[in-house]
Image 1 (cartoon, rainbow, N blue to C red):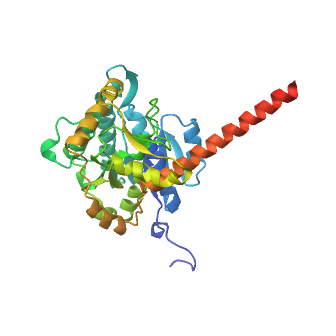
Image 2: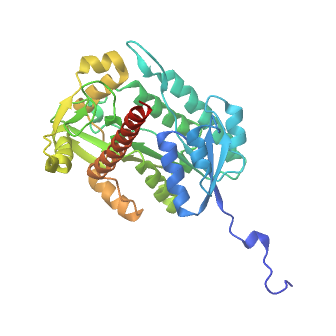
Image 3: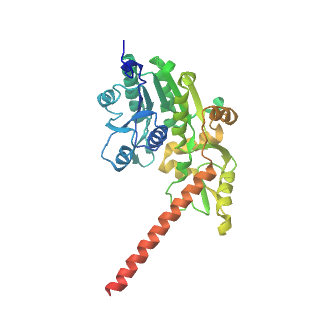
Length: 345
């Protein structure tokens, strides 16, 4: 008979351990921070460089453990996945930059994906891993107009097929985000987002589904609140569905009081294909078929999972606020430097 006040260790609920791959990427950071807010999980943030500035920022969070792991190094993943209950998997096609190709390399992402899924399989067979969430990319709105699809789309879809081939679909939730708001932050001269210009890669009157990259973290948090319901499910996720003109109007509504007239500016397709060929193919694909997120269905799921999507307007307000802070900081530094020059004279 147990003494009063004592408990059996097995009766104490164990805190789930969630591994987040590519933890210092835009998606990874959003997932780690969102899960950390819940104070429900131990988060294993996996990154190639645990000493990077971004990694140190994650390490400062109370529920986060930094672990070295590289998607191109299967053994490092095997070690990083030891004793985890859930894995969030994310891959990237970005590898250097070459003229006429850009930085997107399909084979590079495929190798990462196969390494990742193989290690998920090994972790699952050990008995503790019970949920895998994979970040893919949205399927087409019109499947008959899917081809040709960009290489960094087909690589993720092929990884999805590999998940099924290894009989992991039963424990997997596939989130398929659309284009990120953050992709509007290009640095192409003349086509940089500002109070006067909203740049885009497609024609001004085409509908374009977009999402804040940080919202992927909200979706992961939501899915983990009802894991059994969303295992063996694939969901195209988006936050907005607007034309280029409508996006520019969102920005205009924020800055018009300052006297700005914002217009949508399409980056020439020839320039896109020269700099990032696969993004040019993506632009063709969006105009021809488009992302297939069901915006009405998403509203129902978001309500169930307590997900409040970031609007483009809210994202733009934060971006402009950060720009103003940076501008004011630079202005102060410049004034101080000029004062020092005057004083030195």
